[in-house]
Image (cartoon, rainbow, N blue to C red):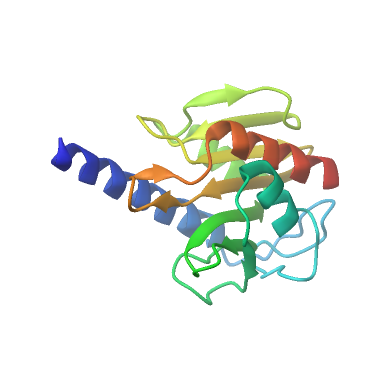
Length: 173
């Protein structure tokens, strides 16, 4: 049972690393349609498509802080949110249609299509535990990811909470 839990956690971490890598790949720095920022840019303090107040309201957790990209392990998104004690909690990645199409086409990556989030949205990765919601509104694309709480082996945020956060982002794009 413990081995199964460790494998699930490692699979979740590996999936998140793959998501971060795919999100930051490419030599082109493409413009995000309505946000107007580069996909690899740290947007902390520059754009309010998702705020600490949004995260706290949806999650019920207090003390969430915005951290700079690369400032702590896992902070690879455009907006990175950590707990009061400095552990990565959630991440927003803004990207382009090429990446969205790659996420969608990747075998066993999407788990379930979600409704009422922009033009198209999915939970990911496939398998027993989802901790990512990726979405698009027109040609503007993003993903909201939860980090895994190591003590429990489960994401900090549920798919429902990630969906609520994705709706906030879509409404502000």
